[in-house]
Length: 318
Image (spheres, rainbow, N blue to C red):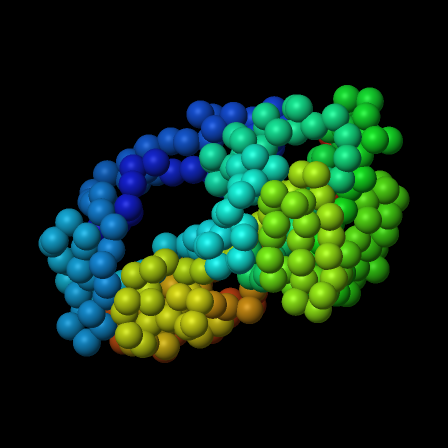
């Protein structure tokens, strides 16, 4: 078993939500990858150039290559803020931030501490994103944070989403849909962000609507790993691996599987999904090597702990 990764640092991404509020710190969220691997597993630190599907070969950035009998693609999702006009332009990391990476979460911590009132907007540019409820959690924590500071009455909080509601699962929408209103958070739905004007302080939608801000927390467009796009037949238009939603076997070749955010399955991109996928994936690797029929039992199972502020949380399972 060989694990290839582009760096030696594993970042516990769920913890990034808490960094802007001073509840966690980046150094607490990073650990070396070797600590996660049992003895006998080989670790190779390198980026990946491409996968030669016909030759069962993975070409690495360091110039070497690895052949395989089974390839598991677990390269996650990456942020592509450059896909949105203006997002990384003037105002980026000054009044426009994301908490989805360490530099953004760190910068946002300082920006929030200096924020003394005005319009704070949380904007999801497009789906899919890692942890779909995280932007809602950020909004709830912001409500708590400003109440703790005694300035909540001076802050207008707005949640801007391309979806038709904050919660889209019917049962969740029924039970939880009013939580933003209860906390005084304005909800703007079906807003497809076309441009971010950091200097002017506005989001522009493709339908002509605009949302103004003094401070914006933006969750950028996500895509799969770049090497997937450089490997013909492996991924979709967003570089996510096309795979059977029940067996996790890639459509490109029988000996390739995908797990977690790297796959284009109709399931949430969340850690719990990877956990439940893992149970099916291990079984299917054994079955594939034995020449048996695959287990088609993965059903998209996910659960999310939703931080609601004030030391409280909700668990949803679907």
